[in-house]
Length: 414
Ligand SMILES: *Cc1c(COP(=O)(O)O)cnc(C)c1O
Image: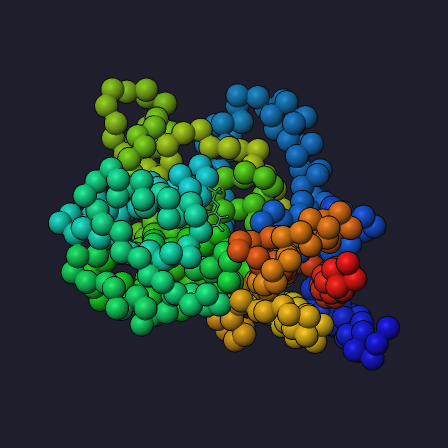
């Protein structure tokens, strides 16, 4: 052990001991599993909470097993809206009646974008950035292929993201919709959302914000910022489990005019009338198309319990402390080995993950997974250290970066 190893080990121990949220990692399944040395991908798939293990089994035996079809009347029909309101209130800064659950983020982004475009007739451009998550780009490509919309692309900095100046340079009276990710999935850049909303609105356009990589890690104030539409997934920092339903937000004053293109029965006014002709349900329910995935909404409720008990300001503070610690380790141990940082250095512009690059990271990631250290690999040659605030310890961050260093040194031996 070098001097820096001893210092950093002592610092990780001290940070974990002083962490006001130190009790939370123990709330997750697998926390004490010796084979999981460092889980650094909670921003791709959050760990299950212990409470979820009980809730899912009780659901099978009780709510589903014994209430049977009565469950729809008793709880499930309203669950997308009640859970949506809870996510809105706890995590999005959204007053009730503007958030609902259903579908995947991809499907919701499509529905929201089509609905938004219909509200800006005569405008012909969608603005988006080339480094946005693939699904966001492909969906807008599909809309452009099906309509006379033109895509106007922003090329942002590799280690940053879209700034207000970048956006101001491309919006115009032709812009109908701006589609951006609040936290960039690769670099981790955290947008200045109020400033970008203002630039969008000054051009008379609307903003659709993808919250997948910010919700549950970063504080969000959709109502205050004036964001028009938003969607995000629940299996990342909200620990809903693989493929859990996404959420959609439509600003209250847009709801009356909002029409989405998938006219399923569950989004109709009085769906159980089985009537002829589609009439959108009043309010946010009109975003729904089909029977919502109830099972996938169960784990989210347990994670919300934990986040509400911890409080979002403390969750964000822990998130910043984790990424700061990771960057300190990277500077000391990995930069001398040829690694570069592709995330913002300013914590105010950074979400809950840090991306580092090295030409050998693809093969190294595979070896890390074998030894129980699980970050994510991101093209072209990035390792993404995803630090889920409630489940990740400083000790895990230390173990993870130490393992990357060991793999880089092993490469030097061959
Ligand atoms: C994870 C993620 C998605 C996921 O979309 P799905 O429809 O759930 O597969 C979308 N956008 C961003 C920015 C993401 O990070």
